[in-house]
Length: 159
Length: 129
Image 1 (cartoon, one colour):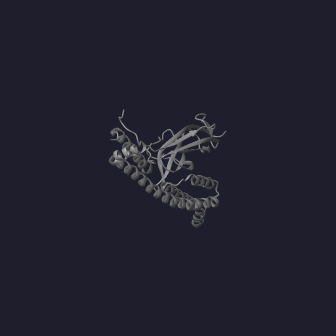
Image 2 (cartoon, rainbow over the protein chains, first blue to last red):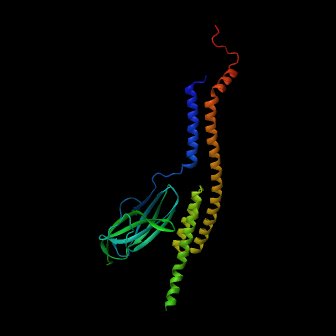
């Protein structure tokens, strides 16, 4: 008689292969924890060397880093808003401040993009917040994706 | 005066709105194609190029690209859906094959094993001294 253990191993192996085939066919694309990335890099494309003291209307360069790990293609829009220290940023609601600029990018899953941006601040102030707010296209419009970054700026009138 | 203001407003903003709608529509087409299993990397590159053109004010060229993306996304979606159906059928067949083989081995393994053993070891005698 064939060894009982051998038969069990063979049958088990075949059932594992069958299960693997089903998993690959129907569940391989499932994403356990979808998330997006938003980062602001300095003018040297590194974390640091961010502008701190500026004059009104003075241009400065930054890099905007976006990453998509949502499990599907995403259409992102990053709004750059100018606020103040008194106006706090929320994780759930968009920042209620005027938009200075916006940047769009479409990213396939598991990809990222680093884009150069040039900004200038139109008004003076101390401890101004430059808020970068990530939105993504969903259900016919852009919705706040609850990801944000900020830079603190002191902006003086031009001499 | 109001008519002139309204006309200026329309001239300034209506093209932007139409452009944005085109991008939205193209993105949705790309997303559906991807959900069907298509490789949308090339379409996404074109969409980003169209976004750059919109931002640069070249709405005509951007519009052409966006329309092309929509058409190609629809084609890729149809092709991917067919491929997905084929893959699903193959997966079911392969699974059935594995399960069937497991059942057959479980039920008939003994007989087939010894028959094969006897065939390959013809003339082999056990225990003769």
